Length: 135
Image (cartoon, rainbow, N blue to C red; front, top):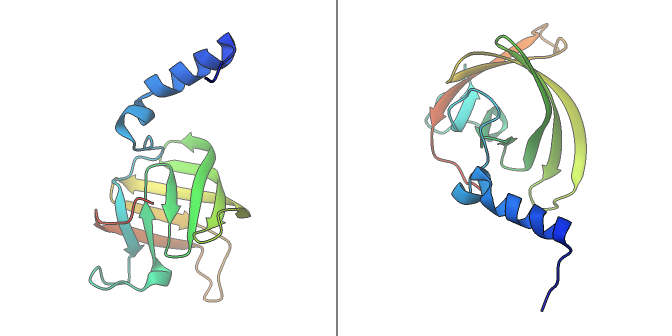
């Protein structure tokens, strides 16, 4: 029989009673619809894996990484957070990145970044599908 100290038992009860535990799905941290987002210039049908991300409520996932949203700050439609990214096959933190997004509506987000080789400082993604792998 496992015996828990009263403080530990209280934490277990609180965790079990939390909404995330009851539904099995994480809380939505950003005002986005869950699902697959692709770069605005990519087609929804057969998107390039390098240009698509699945929003899972508490993380963004690609075919090779999962980036958990941490230290979220919001100001109007602008959001910044630290992405704790792990490789899908080897679940250890491989990178921590500071991300800046603008979210004009539930099915669009814009990543603000330093200028790329084409001089672009923003990349727009649009929602395409609810289907993605939850794990």
